[in-house]
Length: 139
Image (tube, rainbow, N blue to C red; front, top):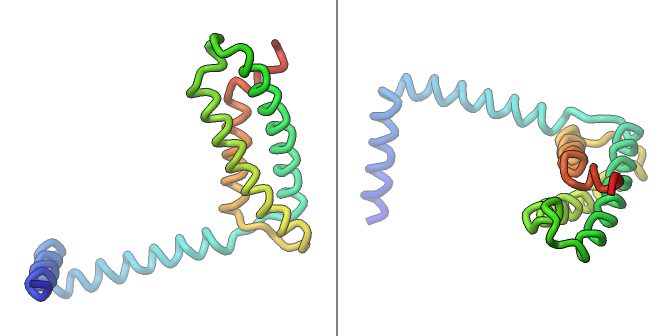
Protein backbone atom coordinates (compact mmCIF):
# COMPACT_ATOMS: atom_id res chain seq x y z
CA UNK A 1 0.00 0.00 0.00
CA UNK A 2 2.75 2.46 0.97
CA UNK A 3 4.69 1.45 -2.15
CA UNK A 4 1.68 2.34 -4.34
CA UNK A 5 1.32 5.73 -2.64
CA UNK A 6 5.00 6.51 -3.11
CA UNK A 7 4.85 5.41 -6.75
CA UNK A 8 1.85 7.61 -7.45
CA UNK A 9 3.55 10.53 -5.67
CA UNK A 10 6.76 10.18 -7.67
CA UNK A 11 4.89 9.81 -10.97
CA UNK A 12 2.72 12.82 -10.17
CA UNK A 13 5.76 14.88 -9.32
CA UNK A 14 7.34 13.88 -12.63
CA UNK A 15 4.23 14.80 -14.60
CA UNK A 16 3.81 18.12 -12.82
CA UNK A 17 7.35 19.20 -13.49
CA UNK A 18 7.40 18.11 -17.14
CA UNK A 19 10.11 15.47 -16.94
CA UNK A 20 13.23 14.57 -15.02
CA UNK A 21 15.66 17.01 -16.59
CA UNK A 22 13.27 19.92 -16.21
CA UNK A 23 12.47 18.84 -12.64
CA UNK A 24 16.16 18.72 -11.76
CA UNK A 25 16.71 22.27 -13.03
CA UNK A 26 13.63 23.69 -11.30
CA UNK A 27 14.35 21.82 -8.09
CA UNK A 28 17.98 23.01 -7.99
CA UNK A 29 16.92 26.62 -8.52
CA UNK A 30 14.34 26.32 -5.74
CA UNK A 31 16.90 24.86 -3.35
CA UNK A 32 19.32 27.71 -4.08
CA UNK A 33 16.58 30.29 -3.49
CA UNK A 34 15.59 28.69 -0.17
CA UNK A 35 19.22 28.54 0.97
CA UNK A 36 19.72 32.21 0.12
CA UNK A 37 16.55 33.24 1.95
CA UNK A 38 17.55 31.17 4.97
CA UNK A 39 21.04 32.69 5.01
CA UNK A 40 19.66 36.26 4.93
CA UNK A 41 17.10 35.49 7.63
CA UNK A 42 19.63 33.88 9.95
CA UNK A 43 22.72 36.01 9.39
CA UNK A 44 21.43 39.58 9.19
CA UNK A 45 21.75 41.20 12.60
CA UNK A 46 21.26 44.47 14.48
CA UNK A 47 23.39 45.95 17.21
CA UNK A 48 22.62 45.28 20.88
CA UNK A 49 22.06 49.04 21.30
CA UNK A 50 19.32 49.08 18.65
CA UNK A 51 17.75 46.04 20.28
CA UNK A 52 17.84 47.79 23.64
CA UNK A 53 15.99 50.76 22.18
CA UNK A 54 13.18 48.54 20.88
CA UNK A 55 13.07 46.68 24.21
CA UNK A 56 12.66 49.99 26.05
CA UNK A 57 9.94 51.02 23.59
CA UNK A 58 8.15 47.78 24.37
CA UNK A 59 8.44 48.45 28.11
CA UNK A 60 6.66 51.79 27.66
CA UNK A 61 3.97 50.19 25.48
CA UNK A 62 3.55 47.35 27.98
CA UNK A 63 3.06 49.80 30.85
CA UNK A 64 0.44 51.67 28.81
CA UNK A 65 -1.24 48.36 27.97
CA UNK A 66 -1.39 47.46 31.66
CA UNK A 67 -3.07 50.77 32.43
CA UNK A 68 -5.46 50.28 29.53
CA UNK A 69 -6.46 46.80 30.72
CA UNK A 70 -7.01 48.06 34.27
CA UNK A 71 -9.18 50.87 32.93
CA UNK A 72 -11.16 48.47 30.75
CA UNK A 73 -11.83 46.17 33.71
CA UNK A 74 -14.31 48.75 34.99
CA UNK A 75 -15.40 50.16 31.59
CA UNK A 76 -16.25 47.05 29.58
CA UNK A 77 -19.12 48.75 27.75
CA UNK A 78 -16.83 51.21 25.95
CA UNK A 79 -16.07 50.34 22.33
CA UNK A 80 -12.32 50.71 22.86
CA UNK A 81 -12.53 48.05 25.60
CA UNK A 82 -14.11 45.39 23.40
CA UNK A 83 -13.17 41.75 23.92
CA UNK A 84 -11.36 41.72 20.59
CA UNK A 85 -9.25 44.79 21.44
CA UNK A 86 -8.35 43.45 24.86
CA UNK A 87 -7.40 40.03 23.44
CA UNK A 88 -5.13 41.64 20.83
CA UNK A 89 -3.42 43.73 23.50
CA UNK A 90 -2.95 40.77 25.85
CA UNK A 91 -1.60 38.58 23.03
CA UNK A 92 0.83 41.29 21.92
CA UNK A 93 2.07 41.92 25.46
CA UNK A 94 2.66 38.23 26.12
CA UNK A 95 4.52 37.79 22.85
CA UNK A 96 6.54 40.95 23.57
CA UNK A 97 7.58 39.69 26.99
CA UNK A 98 8.92 36.49 25.42
CA UNK A 99 10.78 38.43 22.75
CA UNK A 100 12.18 40.91 25.28
CA UNK A 101 13.58 38.02 27.30
CA UNK A 102 15.35 36.72 24.20
CA UNK A 103 16.68 40.16 23.27
CA UNK A 104 17.94 40.77 26.80
CA UNK A 105 20.08 37.64 26.49
CA UNK A 106 21.81 39.05 23.41
CA UNK A 107 22.20 42.49 25.01
CA UNK A 108 23.67 41.02 28.20
CA UNK A 109 26.16 39.01 26.14
CA UNK A 110 26.94 42.12 24.06
CA UNK A 111 26.30 40.19 20.85
CA UNK A 112 24.32 41.19 17.80
CA UNK A 113 20.62 40.35 17.67
CA UNK A 114 19.16 38.41 14.71
CA UNK A 115 17.24 40.73 12.40
CA UNK A 116 14.24 38.39 12.40
CA UNK A 117 13.96 38.64 16.19
CA UNK A 118 14.30 42.43 16.05
CA UNK A 119 11.64 42.65 13.32
CA UNK A 120 9.24 40.50 15.33
CA UNK A 121 9.77 42.75 18.33
CA UNK A 122 9.19 45.85 16.18
CA UNK A 123 5.91 44.33 14.94
CA UNK A 124 4.74 43.82 18.52
CA UNK A 125 5.54 47.42 19.44
CA UNK A 126 3.73 48.64 16.31
CA UNK A 127 0.72 46.47 17.14
CA UNK A 128 0.46 48.07 20.56
CA UNK A 129 1.04 51.55 19.14
CA UNK A 130 -1.82 51.03 16.68
CA UNK A 131 -4.21 49.67 19.29
CA UNK A 132 -6.48 51.53 21.73
CA UNK A 133 -3.50 51.46 24.13
CA UNK A 134 -2.00 54.38 22.18
CA UNK A 135 -5.07 56.52 22.89
CA UNK A 136 -5.43 55.44 26.50
CA UNK A 137 -3.58 58.47 27.86
CA UNK A 138 -6.26 60.74 26.36
CA UNK A 139 -8.92 59.32 28.73
